Image (tube, rainbow, N blue to C red; front, side):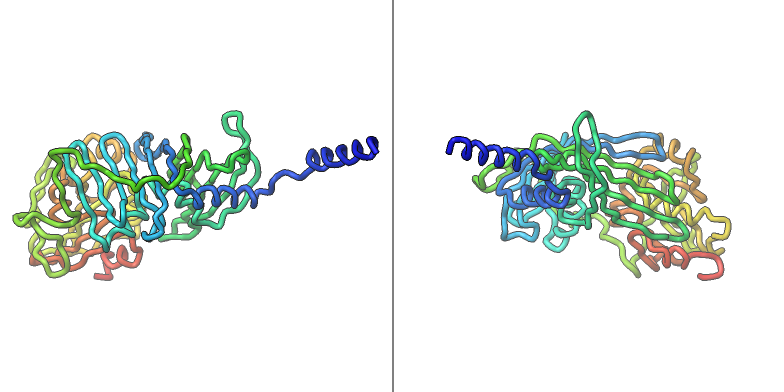
Amino acid sequence: MRRFCGFILFLLLFSFSCSSPETPEAILNGAKEKIFSANRLSFNQLMFWENPELDEVDTFSLEILLRKNPETELGFDYLGKREGSGYNFIEGVLFSISHKDSIVTYYPEKNISRMNQSSMYLTNSPIRLLKNGPWNYLGDTAIDGKTYSEFLWIEMDTTIMEKKVLLKNHLFINPSNELADFYSRRLYHDGKKNQFIDVYYSSYEFDELGEELVYEIPQGYVSKVWGQKDPEAAQVLSKGDLAHDFQLADENGGLVRLSDFRGKKVLLDFSMINCGWCKIALEQFNKPDYQFAENIVPLYVNPVDSKEKMDKYRSKVAIPFPVLINAEEIGKAYGVSGYPTFFLIDENGKVEDVVVGFIDEEILKWKKGVV
């Protein structure tokens, strides 16, 4: 009997020791289950955001706390913070905090879904990544002495204006705890590296539901509504509106006034450096077979970046028309909130067309022989 019991114990030990390792699919599903079943979850994100045109890498350290809330579209509330600012979504209310300006900005309900989708705190987080896909297992790989299961999601593989655009997402999950530790967003143009964004996740904490999330606005802060202008400020421009006149310095220090071009159409290209689609638009304008219609004067307007950064950018990226800088107030006056944004001003100084984002058909409309 004793010998028989020993044999049974041997078989049990043997079966456990020889059991097959967890499959990649089980590891991925385990990571999803851990994240989306959590009642309360917090983690840190250390982001390295590459700017290939300037040979620079911006670093962002973010903290986010999430609490399950089935009553909202996202399914959770969250508090996000980084040095000097915050971004919170509580009980269906989205608002950001600028400690530099002592301003709290609330976002209208119609904009909340889009703003959450583009939030720096969520876009490159396990919350968004594990919800999307499809993720395909690439194999096991070692990073800093640890072995991870690597998964790939090809988010974009297309051709835009003869340019091959490939966007690959790599997610590295630690099989020992089924948590994503590292993510790499890799963008290629015509098979060449364009921009990489790397994100490291740490300090995961899971807890019970606990109290509802609350954010106390610091004393003395001013509250504003996003998109709402002061009574004396200009309103967001649309077709038919009279374009706001302006006088801005160009890259050589000369002054450019919009009203000086009356009698011709003016194309205002509102762009910024750290914008892939802005660069693609410039590449189209730089093509030998692209010439603007004779009655169109194009102007590059940058409301975001400093002259020093623009000088460095222009040394690497050709901008085939005048570059207007220090345009923050003009961007606000025209209601620009995303890049690129184009305004076509007619011969009488009125807005003829507004194009938000890169749309290849629109780019071709301004070409010689078309307009």
